Length: 95
Image 1 (tube, helix red, strand yellow):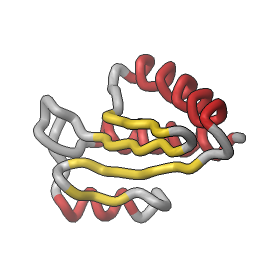
Image 2 (cartoon, helix red, strand yellow):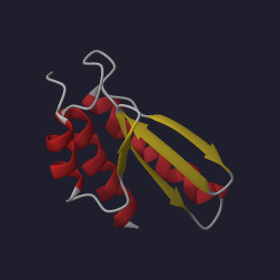
Image 3 (tube, rainbow, N blue to C red):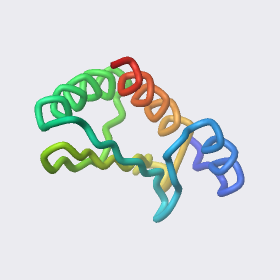
Image 4 (tube, rainbow, N blue to C red):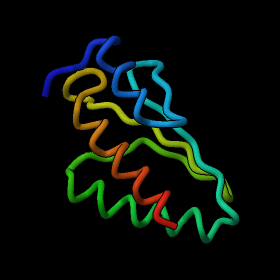
C-alpha cells in the first residue's frame, strides 16, 4: 500500500469531521455518555478492524476514546487508514 502525500491526506480529511493529521497518522477522539458506551463502540470497531486486517492505535479513559491510524508497513497514512476511519465514523454515528 502506497503512503499518501500530505496533500492527498488533507484532501481525504475534508470528508472526515474531527480528524486531524500529525506525526504520520490521522487522529480523532470521541466522548461518550459513560464507560459502557465507550467500550461497546470500541468492541464494534474492533470487529470491523479485524475484518479489514487493520488495527487502530487507541486509548480509552472512562468515557473518552482517542484513535490514531497509520499503516506501519508503509511508514505513514494510506488509503487503508481512511477506509477504517470512515468505518469508525459510520459505527459511531449509527447510535
